[in-house]
Length: 304
Image (cartoon, rainbow, N blue to C red):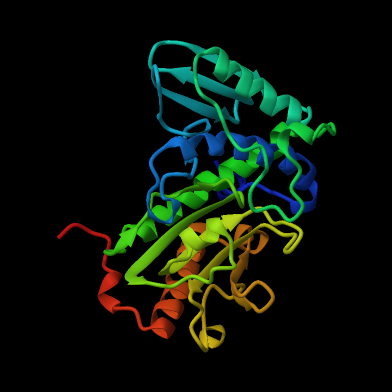
């Protein structure tokens, strides 16, 4: 296998405009699945709600219900939504072109038929003009190849995030997909609380209540129509925009208020994993230095 083919396998091509029509159905399906996790006990900064990556897609992990536990999986190889319970019941739905309403209704109906209380709010989260799932009846496309490429980028991104996360000695969270914004992220905390603004909404008020540095990847959206890696420090420290970060393609984006590294620039690198680690390390140091974090929070990542 050549170096070029390995890059293609691990860091496949993904165009945000091409992905956007499929992304709409995928995002809403994963929001419905993710909302099932809100039945679990709350953990600080919503640590319990991400979807976890698996060898075939994404999973909720075990969720408690009256009959034991159940799990919902999104399989991006066979392209199915699958559910199974600790009592042995299981079912599946194909992921294919359809409406959000039809897909979500079918999933919730199957879960209820298995005795699972699948009560969720039907209004999508963190969307500028949300349409309730049951009212979103417009036929939506589903491109298997694009979804599979998107998922493989998540896998490669998680692998590099885990390497850098292993160096952090403070409080962090498991790496996962935030289904509200459809990005994979890792978050680092220095242990200092922040009083969030009361007008930022319920979700952000319970997420942005501590000093943090967050890094991740998303496939782009209307505000930034290109797949990109990002890094931001909260609260934003004065002068962080002037910090020098790497690799060469990385930059501060004033409109987004964060450091960005376009995915296509990383794909063209001779060593994408090395350059992504450079981005994570340099933007962490930029934020930690500007915000006065303890330098001892970042170690070697090796057992002593």
